[in-house]
Length: 305
Image: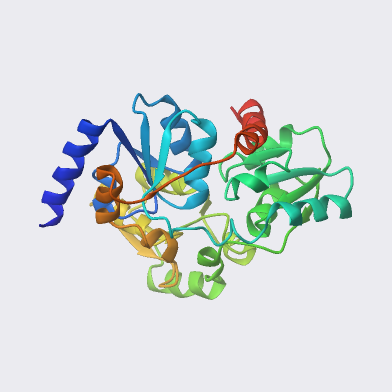
C-alpha cells in the first residue's frame, strides 16, 4: 500500500466511524492531508469542542490529547501514538508547583499549556505562546510564577516590565538546541532571509530574530510577508509545510537540531490504526482533574479571548 492509498482508507474510515482527526502543526505533511483540523495545541482543542464527531484522534503529544479531553469530556479522545509525550510537559509535576508556591507566597501561578492536566489543577491561569503577553498584562497580580519554560517566560517578561517574574529551570529541548551561532551561520549563508523563531528559543536567539511568535504565527507571517526567503527557528516540519504552501518562496531550517523526536513518533499508520480502532490510547482523566484543570483554561479564555 502506498501513502495515497492509506490516506484514502483513513478518509473513508473517519467518515464511516464519525471520527475527527486533529493534527498538530509539527506533524508530517502526509498526516496533515488527512486531518480535519491543523494548528497549535489549544486551537485544536477548541476546534474539537465544536466538532460534531464524537471521537477525536489526536496526532500530537499526550498533553495535547489531555487538553482536548478537558474541553470535551463527553467525547472519546484517542492519542494516535501512546508513546508520544512532551519532555517539557514532563519536567514539572503538581508537587513541584506547590513547592514553588510555598517559596513565593502570594504570587499568581501561570502555566504554559505545554503541561500535564494534573499540573494544571494547581495553577491560576494557563497561557499559550500567542496569548501569554495579553493574559499576563490583564492579570491584576504584579508577582508571577511562570512555569515551566523560562525562555518563553523571558520573552513575556521583556514585554511586561511592570510585572515581577519567577521562573522554573525548564524548557523545550528542541528549541533549546539552537544558539546565536546558528543564526549568524544561517544569516551569513542567506543574507536576504528573515529570521522567524519561536519564543521557546533561548533569549540569545530571540534577540537576533526578525519575528518571534507561535508556530501558526510564524507560518502566517511567512505566508503574508513580501520577503522571499526565511530562516525558520522552530520544529523542522514547519519548513516542509511552508514549502508546500508557498512554493514561490525559500525556507531554510535554523539548525539540523530543530527536530522534535516525540512529534516524529506519530506516523500515518498510527493515525490509521487509531481511526480503525486497532491502535492508539484513549485518554481517561478523573472527573475532579477535568473540573479543576478546566478552571485555569477558562480563565485564559476569559482574559485572552
